[in-house]
Image (cartoon, rainbow, N blue to C red; front, side):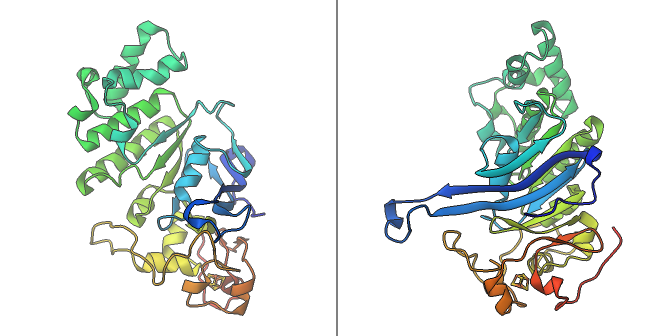
Length: 334
Ligand code: SF4
């Protein structure tokens, strides 16, 4: 079992995941014969972390690393196979947790005027008397930089960035304490991305929201996060405060991701592929699942799975070479 992200005093914790797994059973079809009974894909495989109230914790990793599956578990859209997800400030029905999706068009009903769409969670949760619902919708639209008159429009009448603003207004309508943002800007033009990120940051500060943020874009992660978890094949391999991660990363996978990121004078772009293919999650490598791609792998790495271990600077790293100091590591004060 992994130790929780530290140091966060218990009273400050807004959310804690403890040893969370999500395994998808696979059988039959094209894979019949290649798999044994009970085989499963371990999309999330023993993940533990905590988020301090009012902060943004981001998950980063290549496509297929399990970050979006984990986001859906945290948002309550799916159930973990095992482990616990605890919210300090949400009720048992999860009403105070809202999600902002990558594709705002897909998350808005095209037949609903957006006033109706934003009012829906207020009405569903009976948060306000009917007479106060539309004034609240107008207030929410203004909070996200749109106009009260926009209530009568349909989603197709907005640009991509405006639709994401509508989605954010809808998420805020339920008075959340916790927002899960799954790649909320990756479907948008670069110029619009910055506006939406700024909006999210401003709203988070104004409303005191805690956020779990998912992205494969390191520039975005660096801009929005207080802490970062790096995922590889369903596991967290490094957890660190953002500045530490970007200035003194330790895990070989994190270092490769960062080495490939664009410099500050260039625009953010997607994380490029690391040398070697992502292993088949149906048949993951033994030991450290990164070993076929890792320049520091040795015999121990092939046979023994590394667990997250606390480092002197407060980060956590799952790597034998870091633990053995086989590779040089820097320790900064967070
Ligand atoms: Fe590389 Fe071994 Fe560390 Fe895995 S445990 S990241 S293979 S050095």
